[in-house]
Length: 416
Picture 1 (tube, rainbow, N blue to C red):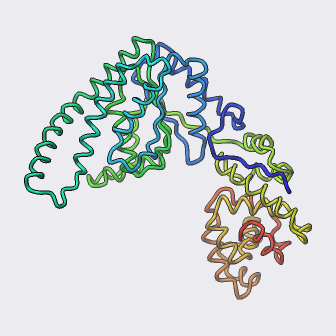
Picture 2 (picture 1 turned 90 degrees about the horizontal axis):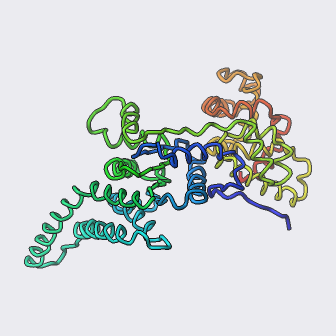
Picture 3 (picture 1 turned 180 degrees about the horizontal axis):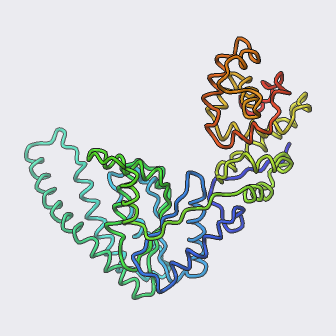
């Protein structure tokens, strides 16, 4: 039985930091722990899907715990977990309440109680708004309406004073030598209106002295959220509005640096996932997109594919360079891979066009090379050529034409 290990998509820790995220950690921790840093202070960690935002937040959290554990109350909030809530303020306050309540010495019991009272009132309001009146008598409806009106008045008053109440609690914690740090992750996975809901709750209720917020963001996702929120108002430039919107919330925008070939290569060599990836690391450095999540998926599929090939008779003559390129194509462009499975000659066409042996827009050339399949292959080639930056190095150095007869076998090995 082959010895196969896989890479998890869970955030990496210090020992698994093969992509050098630690270069961000100490500067951020210094900002948070420096007594001269003015609060409220919000840090936005910007990056695309799978770029390592969660890893960075986790490493900052761990460094604060290890070196400054007695100075901060660390609060973790994942809005996606609470995506079915009607609004995000209640679970956000619950996260703070739970973090304080978990203190081993119960040093914040008074604050926990006061926060609990606030949360109970807000929760009661949510419950009353959802009361099912079906089949209720007129008298019962009247009582419920009166109860709701009374509670609504209490909740409105409580919400109006909530910022002041939270500031008092943050100040009390600061007097005990503790400041609050909120870690907010997975916002990108929420619906657009929920994204704006969280951001507005941060601005309205967490913009407090002695409070830090670290929030992982994808700029494109926030732009979509702002677009949905403000579309009824007819603003022409939603991206500009999103920039202004975030400028009012975030004091330090930190954009994760794109990974270079050296980091990708180092990650592959350090992952220890089979000989295939290591032998073809130079190819992978040039064609794998610099995204940690994508890299892990490519390496996992490569390792399993390598084991399948080793255990299947009659595949000794497969060219592993082509296997590597097809695995990358499978992960990084599923749509193109689907077309390739149906029409393997598309691999040859893309190779010829990227190697300047066939012009994309010349039907005659396609007809000479592919005969009756020319029209379909030219259309597919035209629609995919230039769509992704990694396609040029992938096909620019490939040799699919030399193995055209066996392309179905290659594709079968990779799920085609």
